[in-house]
Structures are given as C-alpha cells and as structure tokens.
Length: 392
Ligand SMILES: O=C(O)CCC(=O)C(=O)O
Image 1 (cartoon, protein in one colour):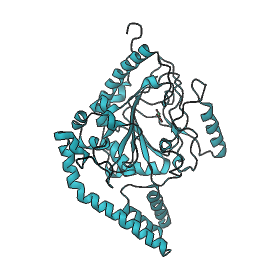
Image 2 (spheres, protein in one colour):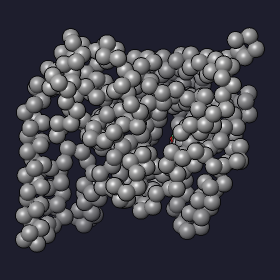
Image 3 (cartoon, helix red, strand yellow):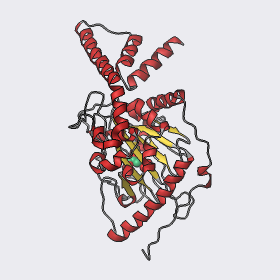
Image 4 (cartoon, protein in one colour):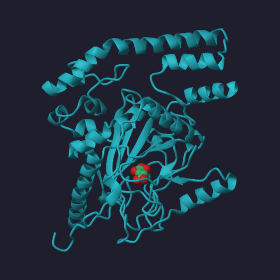
C-alpha cells in the first residue's frame, strides 16, 4: 500500500466526553411518540462513550479496508448503495462484537421493539463513511424493500425501522441524513426503491431538488430537516419515512469532512430481512453472542411460530452457546401462547362486530388495540391523541 496511505480519521475531541444514561421507560415512550408524530427522532448520547470509542477505532480499521479495496479493484462499480459502494461494509455483527453491542444497546433496541415487535430481526447492518463531495442519495423509504403492492400507504403498523448512530459529529455540511417530517403518513411513495442513482450531478440530485422545491411551494411545513447530531447520538426513522443521505459539501481537509456511520435497520420478525445475516454468520460465532443478539439474527421463532428448526427452537443449533436463549424461550412459552390467543380472540371479536355492524367508540377501539397488539401502532398513537384532545 505504498502510494495510497490511509488517512487517519480525526474525531471531534469532545465526542468521548459526554454523560450516558439508560433512558427511563417514560423517555423511551416519549421518543416512540415523536416517531409516530414526525416519523423520526434523535436520541442524543444514545450509546456509552466507551462503545463509541471502540466504534471509532473500528472506523479507522475500515478505512484500511477501503483503501485496499480501491487499490486492488480500482472500483468504479455501482450496486444498490450507488457509486460509493467501495466505502461501505455490511454484515457488521460478523466484523466485531462491538457492532452487536450497538445493535442491542438498550437505548436503541427498546425503542425499536415498541414499533416492530419483540421478535424483530436485524434488517441490515452497514458501515459507511461518506467523504467530501460525496453525492446525496435520492429520497427513498426503507419499506420500499417490500414492494409497492402488498402494503398500501399510509400504514398503521410499520414494517421496519432504521437507526443511524453517528460515529463522529453529523453536520449540515458532511451530509447529515435528510428527512421529511410527517412523510410516514403521506400516501405517495418516493420514486426510488433501491434503483441505481440517476443523477449526473456530482453532489446534488436534480430529482431531489425538484421534490424539495415542489413540496416547499405546496406547503411551507413540507420542508426537510437534517439529522445534525453529535457523535454517539442515534437517529431513528420509520420504514415509511422519506429520507436520504445528504450531500457532503465539505472540503477534504475540513474538520468533520467525513461522516463515519453505523446504519442498523430492524424489520418485523415475519418479514424477510434485507441483508441475509442468517446465511452469513457461522453457528460458532452466533453461539458467542448475547441472547438478545442471537434473537436478532434469527435464532428464535416469532410470536406466531415462524422460523423453527429441526430441533424446534433454532437456539438449539448453537450448542451450549444457545442454552441461555433456550431458557428464555422456555420461560416465555406461556406468555407467547397468551399473546397469540389474545390476538386470535381479537380477530374473532372484530369479525363478530362487523357481522353485527357494531361500531366502537374511540376509547373502546384504543382498549381493543392495546389488548391485542404487541407493538404500538400509528392508530394507537392517533387514538390516544384524539381522546386526550377531546378531554381538554
Ligand atoms: O447515510 C444516510 O444518511 C442514509 C442512508 C440510507 O438511507 C441508506 O443507506 O439507504
């Protein structure tokens, strides 16, 4: 690697100097409400500084991989991540246990589970490090992965949720993620799923600019925001929220010119994850992971029983390393059966009501949904808001 030395990343000095707290249940619920209200939320100082430090060390290691890749392949290829594919890595749980700690960080996973369920899976795991003059992505939603036909917008129950943890400060110059607040309730899909980028402009996408100016004309509240945040913070957005990586307009020597990023997407347990971690991670490696992580990569069944193995619970495939998860599964068996039964009864009640044309009041609907659902939904959030407002 004689002529292409890696440039060490210089992280913001303040980035490791913050107070980390495990959020209270009330704080978690406030973030969940913000997600239903705006389609996204930012948790500042979401991860312990010690974990952030490890992620920064990894980010530097990854830069070596990128330099080598570029040197070997003189990469110009495009894939779903666009022209900067050489600067992205996936299968993060296979790269380092610190990425597993990130995926199961209580300030992250507790919010995620309220929206996509206790039996959710990792949808995809990606490290990227956008650099100076890197082009913005086109506006997209992550639930486009599941097509446009099966799930009509706006959804009440979201299919997936994405998180990005800033490994260094996110600024409006280095391409902090752009999000349209409220777009999770829009009926329309953005035009792009995972199609290759169409823009010839090196930094800005004319397609995006068209949307942004048209939306601003239609309604001043249709203005996008950028997830400007300090290292160690996490932004969450729903699979239905319009978003894109922002343009990186920094100069190469500018402070915070790069934007090292860990993207962890989670999907409902009954949907196919975008990244196929199940076939990439060896049993021996998964056996060393914590039970929460083992569940996220597919070693548990869903509440309804998807994902069993020839031994019943897939945790049994992990030998001794699966014992803790097996214990949890056994202890949970009764709760899962009750959950399932409640839902079945809910469906029967609903059917009977529709036969008799019974219409529930808002309060009754809310009770019914809370009794039946194991995740929070947009409908629950909106009913609560309506009932609260009617009492003022
Ligand atoms: O990097 C970002 O800010 C957004 C990434 C994203 O949306 C994607 O990879 O699809």
